[in-house]
Amino acid sequence: MPEAVDLGIVIVNWNVRPLLAACLDSVYLDLAQSAAQLSAAVCVVDNGSSDGSTAMLRAQFPHTLLIETDNIGMGAGNNRGLRLLAERCQPFALLVLNPDTVVRAGALRALVDFLRGHPRAGIAAPKLLNPDGSLQHAGFRFPALGQALFDLFPPPGLLGRLADTPINGRYPAAAYQSGTPFQVDHTLGAAFAVRGEAMAACGVFDETFQMYCEEIDWHWRLAGAGWERWIVPSAEIIHYGGRSTAQAPAESFVRLWTSRRRLYYRYHSPALNAVLNPLVRLAMRQRIRSNYRRSQRGQMSSDERAAMNLALNDVINVWQRRHPPL
Image 1 (cartoon, helix red, strand yellow):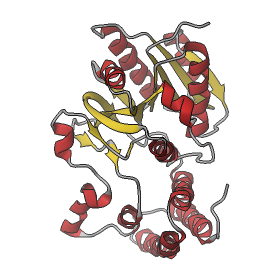
Image 2 (cartoon, rainbow, N blue to C red):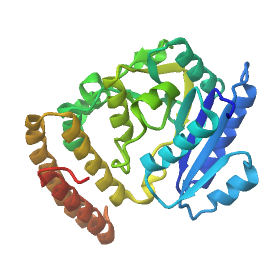
Image 3 (cartoon, rainbow, N blue to C red):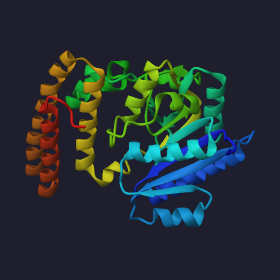
């Protein structure tokens, strides 16, 4: 029987070798400097990188568990690591961590301690910071029509400030600044710790979400089973954001809206979906027209325009189907 550890950490990597190295440096430094040292195991799942990530791992972090796969997506990649750690190490908690993050001192201990002190907490997530130290929202309300409309038709001018308010599913910045843990509907997928017991009860990521919304779906299932989801502001993690998806913007855009279609179909009524579907298609057609104007002004190359318009048409096709693709 393997000896149980306090924390298992899973990082899914795709062609962000320098960021991955900085992330692992911060993880191991925080583990080593913890006042009461955490027992932990770290697993990197490499989704078919071609930038030397795996060679770097073997040379610089030889004690890190490594799983090499094709590019199977974030959900499936995380599941590989979660299942391996659960089998080998029986962690009390498991941290899903993006490679474009840097863990600040004490963050890992704060997340584990919070879960230990709150038996109904299934999720504990850190306060996220942008690289300049400003707040990055880490907790959100479950997406409904309002959040979709903000994304589809961003309000102009001063009304744009509403995007950072509860109207758009955000929690007040003061909640993070108070330092007191607070409950949320779901957390950002960049960094969150799940209680091992909750994972055993509710399963792992749904792999039909290849990219985007997989953490929202998991949190929704945990909520349905009565597990609480919390932000722990004393745990701080810097999140650079979007470095992997920026390598394939058009493909990432299609995956985002395909995953949103599946999420809304799964958790919302036929009536809400009947309202939202034509609005999504309208917004995508508006973006196609906007891309033409941008290309005429020299703000977008013809190749960029063609790739993005193909993606926009793919999204239109997904949202006009009666059922979302499996």
